[in-house]
Structures are given as structure tokens and as C-alpha cells.
Image 1 (cartoon, one colour):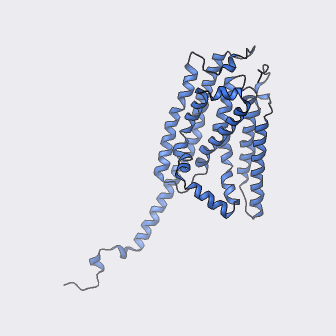
Image 2: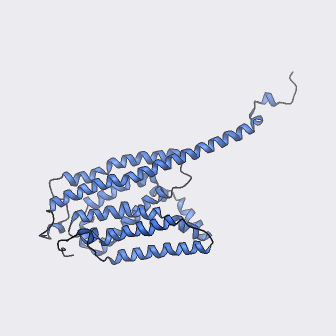
Image 3: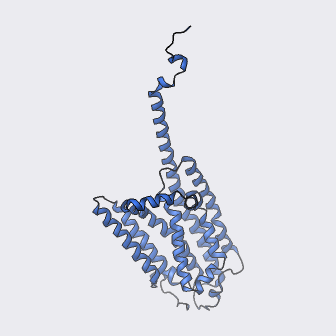
Amino acid sequence: MAALSSPSHPWATFHLDPVACGLIGIAAAGYAYGLLRLAGQGESWPVRRSVVFFGSGLLSLLLFTMAWPGAYAHALFSAYIVQVLGLFMITPVLLACGRPVELVRSVASDRSRRIGGRLTRVRLLRGAVSPIFGALLVPVITSVVVFTGISGASLRSEPLYHALQVALLVLGFLVAVPLIEGSAQVTGIAAAAALFINFLELLLDSLPGGVLTFRTHLLVPVQYLALHRSWGPSPLTDQHTAGAILWGVGEVADLPFIAVLMVRWMRVDEREAREADRLLDEAEGGATLMRPWWETDPRPPR
């Protein structure tokens, strides 16, 4: 892709991305179909979820793929990083807040629900989407994209570029859904472990951004060096800007995850406390059955 001219107003730039248009159309049509099916069953769906899915989730997908990050991803490494972070850490969370998986469950047939139930019992799949391990994917994925040949290869090949976009969305969705649509079966220990690991991940997120920010040698793909732009920052300055964005956005984007996990932990703790109180009440109600045998033995003492 040839280098673009200097933008007069970066965020006013628009670049048509046919793959992103297709993804937006499929997601919007699928969600709307689920709403129609649910309405046909006489059930309601919270309006705020639909607003978040269409108004925030799909709009963010459009912005990260067709506004400045998508238009200048092939000219500025900082724009490329913004797109990677947006597609992996922001758009999936906004889409998950619309509860699309819950909507699918609500309109799915009994057979589909049974198949889904069997899939959720697969240990490997459960571990992959667990909030305990999902958070650790964030620094791993960003490091793999930035410090391997993936970024350069995606800039040289349009099919690989779009495949990376889809992969980031899918992986981000796998991380976000367990946090947003957490199962009621999560224990307090698991919720606390997920919160601890998210704090650890908050520290790990600073590593790839710090490397890009403070490195004095270029790590950006060679495509950026061959553009010979007459505008914008130098490649090294652009790399430092990308590192600062990766560092700052990575840390800030973790805060909502931590907040969600803290709320989830408190809810799980409250639920377990209610369950413990219920069991104690039942035990007190059947206290005569739990008395020592010598107090309930009908035989007269010798």
C-alpha cells in the first residue's frame, strides 16, 4: 500500500475497509435476528444492551478499521498500534457488554444448547476462556504481534492484514466474554485468583510498551522506513509514540477489567455467604437429627 498524504485532520480521515464492513454487517444482522426471534417468543431484551452493542461496539469497530487507525496503519506504526489495541482490548469488551452470547443462548434450540453445554465442559476450552488465564493473553498477544514478524507480514499482505484483524477480535472476545457474562458457578477462590492475576497482568502490560518507548534502535517493520514520508514524525519518534500508546492504553484498558473482577468477586462472596447462611438455617431446623446418639437413644439408661 502506498503512503498516504499528510492528513489535514487525522480523525476526519475515512478509509473504506471491505472486510470490516462485512464483519459489521454480519454482526448487526445476527444481533438483530436474535432480537426478532426473542420478540417472537414473547420475551424482552434490555434496550441498553442493544444500544451498547450497536452504538458503542460496532461503532468502535468502524472507527478502528476505517478512521485514522485503519487509514494510516500502513504509514504510521503508532496508528497500527492503536488499531491492534482497539481491536483486541476495546471493541470486544464493548461488544461483549451487549451480551451477544446470552442472546444466542436465549434463542437457540434445545439441541444447540446441549451442544454448547458439551463444549463448555471441555477442559481445554474452559481453560482458554477462563478469566484467570484470559487476562494473561493481553501482554502475550501484543508482544507476539509487535516483536515478531507478524506485524511486518501483515503490512506486506492484505489478506494477512485482515486475518490479523479478525484474529484480534476473536481473541479479545474470548477474553472479554467470561468477564462480562461470567458463570454463576464461579467460586470465590476462582474470582479472587482472577483478580490477582489481572493485577499481575497490569504489571506485565508495561513490558512491551516500555521496550518500544525506551529503545534507541528501530524495531518498526521495514515498510515504514521505505515510505519516505515528507510529513509526520521520524520512524524512531513514531516508534516511541507507539510504545507510549501501547504502554498507556494497555494500563488504562486494564482498569475496567479490574473493576469488573472486583464487582464479580464481591457478588460471588455475597452469594456464597447467603448459601452458607441457608445451610446453617437448615442445619438448625434439623437440630434434633444432629444431636449426639446418647441423647436420642430411646432405650432407658442402665
